Length: 201
Image 1: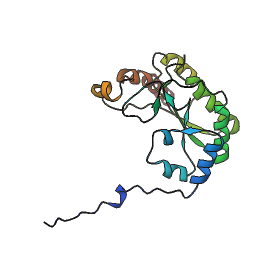
Image 2: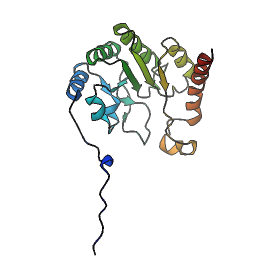
Image 3: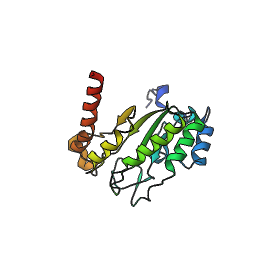
Image 4: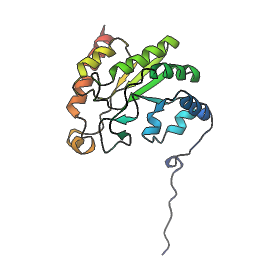
């Protein structure tokens, strides 16, 4: 029996390219020993972003204190915070000419501030190299220490403050058992209110 084969549209196939600045990006990341969520989460857009000379840096190690089924990042007992990490990221950004840096992290429920201080340290170190640099922070929910974490972020004023809400509340116990939908909204609400107040002035 003959069947009609319908070809896939061209956009459905992801082409792996190592052109452009890909090799330079990879070399710099390795040189400064900087991890990325691109690698740890097996992002399908890694080659595209690295070829443009950019990457989303992953701070606070690559071991998460939570174990959510949807995520491919390893979990377990993380290493101590690397005090030299902010300086290395600043050098990386300078070397690659990055003017808009996206920073994310694993969950660090073992730290008293959830890792918020390290975000701030990275931003401060980068601003010492380039005061005009802008930052997009993709942060965890800072379980039980949201107030302390947000107080630290007040001092650095990132361009974008983001947090992933992965799914609807009913699916959290299955998809993201380490998280909590309401807690995520509690993190974002004061940031939204402060931003609204700023723009209305």
